[in-house]
Image (cartoon, rainbow, N blue to C red; front, side, top):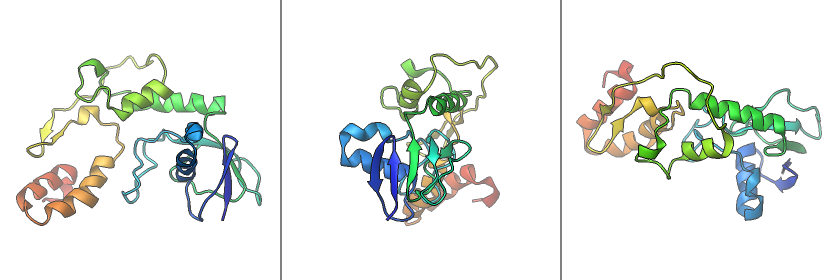
Length: 203
């Protein structure tokens, strides 16, 4: 099985494990090593093809593998990059990587309304945590933000695209989980939701 070192902590993982998964295994093995786990907004273990959209899980691969020790030329998405035997990864130990991650967070928040004090999700928001832990103190963006009118897509769900950071998690949940669950009964509502997510399907 391949061995990978993340921020100086080594772990042996099964073939096909991604860097993000390996980092989470390290964090689960020892709480003191949780700092090696990159942040992630779009990746969710139970969703197929999730990950690779938000880029917040970027890491620096300083050694590709024992067979090819050359470093990767630029930061890579840890949720999409498989571990190679002998790979060495930097998550919090590279100033260059931390600066790149700040830029990613700034881009994610470019059109997001900065109204955390009055937001219903305040205090329980992963994006808020990401910004606080990995972002900058202020945005350099000075232009008008993109806005959308909220759309009701059910009794308990409202599509609020103004707050969307294009992580695609809601789309994948609707496609892979909710659509299957609704197929047993509430057929009209399922079709209505699909029209908002996939207008080209026509219901």
